[in-house]
Length: 451
Image (cartoon, rainbow, N blue to C red; front, side, top):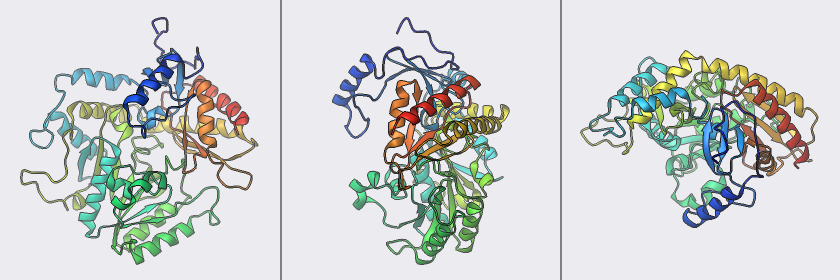
């Protein structure tokens, strides 16, 4: 790779060798020998191994330059190797690790104060974690303590993580089936409004199911005290609820004395055009979980709630009952503080909203009338292209096939939806107009030739 210049982050794709190139292919063979085979999918045309990342550009080990329209699972909202994060990591390099719940590092306190001020509540308190699943675990525990009822209501199509508690609230059989007998049985699932197929586009049927579950309880008989929902289902296929649905859900929660956890791990931190997506959609949560973009590439997440809810936890007597070794990791906290500065000082939510409108409009125009495209939707920089079969049902696997074909054109994309029938876009806010135009043209041509 010595003859390949580091990209600017604003470059268009440059595919020198059909991906995966020989070095990626060789690394795939080596990876298969040492990693559990359930983790990374390795096939003839997948994956590429990354060597560098900056802005919206990725360079693989064979020297190919890509435009990343995933921002690496939504993490790099500010762009890969964001200058603010790099500067923070250099400044914080004298304190690599701390004792988060014993002798806390100073950056932990700074981040807690910053998150509390950033949150929707004036008296917010926070549980820090290292990843989204762990933040969801903390929120579910908090909900059980504060409501006094262990049962949970989640939604079909949701993805909340793969640890035991979060997996209990994630309905997809692909993830659950091998571990079903180890999962908590007190989770009921209601439909999430479907923008393509619902007979009642206002979500009335889904609300009826919510009401029924709150009345009857969870499958194991536990009373439901907590509702967990993504304001927009991300991995579920960029599914956006109809107007009024979230407001009505909030009213039902109040009526049945249930708490709402807003899983904003993907939608928060400005991605959807606001610091949190919930208020713009009418959702009034009692707890919020955030992650992904919060660390700008460093592993950190958080569960945030007002004091009246968070104080349901007992005071520590010197032995915390919910903690972890890397809680309040100082470098991650320092990076997260820099990210919060940038989100607020550079008006990232507004930029995400405007860029998302441009990208969504371009995709709708380009894909108008294209066979098998059922819907093109988005909120800010969380967008989805849904593919349908001839009978109107989901076109199984087409999103995955499009993502694989687009890789050869220098675009990194991911499929979404329970059937891999959605092409999901969660790009960084640093995309240039030229990159947007190129992405729209390329996606259009790939979709047209990929069935």
